[in-house]
Image 1 (cartoon, protein in one colour):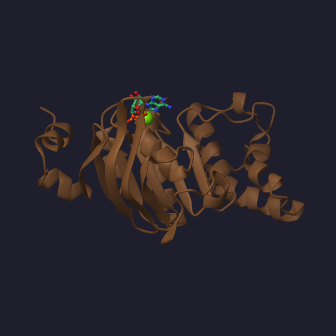
Image 2 (cartoon, helix red, strand yellow; image 1 turned 45 degrees about the horizontal axis):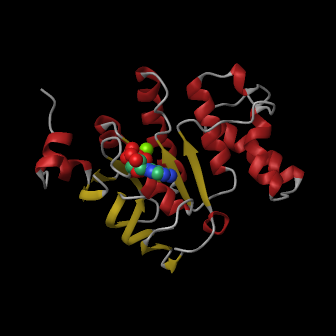
Length: 237
Ligand code: ADP
Ligand code: MG
């Protein structure tokens, strides 16, 4: 499902968190929202999800105006940095949660969970509880849970932010491979340039609530459009 954000603004009190943002995300692509802390990345993601309403502008999903649709109507999966799994439920029960509340048949749900365990490379760990998993494994369960209901869009807000550098690097490569397999339209928020460059088809660079530049990692690296982009993305020396 393609996403179109049209002249969207959102303020909190006197603070303009998102300032007249327009962008288009193609169906099946993996797009990173990259920018420093406070640049409006999470707010933009929450606007796309329907967790916030814009002050002005429109959000289209598959060409349909979704600006005032509820979260449920949008058919979106999320993973956040601290996306708590249900501690009293096994990995299998966590993944099946969305299927159970939609009253999927037991046999269908069972087959789907096994398929997802394999997809996120956790085969054999289905009976464990979250406390018996590493941080990276927990985030993979969170991803499987989000994917269980076959969302049209997957929104990830710094999903690996709380993990150590080595695990982040592994998960980054893994996310890219997963996306190449599943092809769900994915918007990925990060403040880590290297992560954004390595994972995404396209980058949206944000600063102070505005979009500074949109392009492929190579475009942006080779032709930074503004002084901000140059300083933010440029070679570290
Ligand atoms: P980022 O994800 O890029 O760090 P955010 O979108 O979280 O940026 O937030 C931008 C700014 O908007 C924050 O620094 C905060 O001051 C403000 N903000 C975000 N959400 C709220 C809210 N619910 N209430 C008040 N202020 C908020
Ligand atoms: Mg954020």
